[in-house]
Length: 115
Image (cartoon, rainbow, N blue to C red; front, side, top):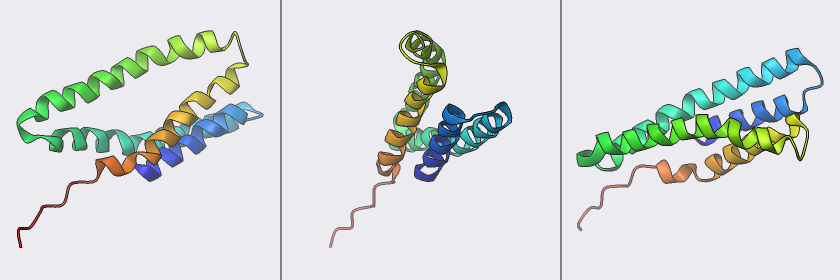
């Protein structure tokens, strides 16, 4: 999760500052590669959090993902009134950095051994 988020942040950062379109396309590719490893980790963590509520937890993660896909353009669009479009892509960079910094939450709890 941590490394995938960092890769995604680098990719979308490259998109934000790319001076020409082919480099921006490379940035989008790197962004997608980074996220392609993090999304399954989120679903896996949600499914293993509470085995009795695994389906509910996975559906919540999926719902939040859909919310992000739908709300992202609605947030980025109005931001273009305040700044250029390329700089609005720094918002996903921030989200990727937060995801990387909070990745330790996904670590499985160690089984407690009664001594």
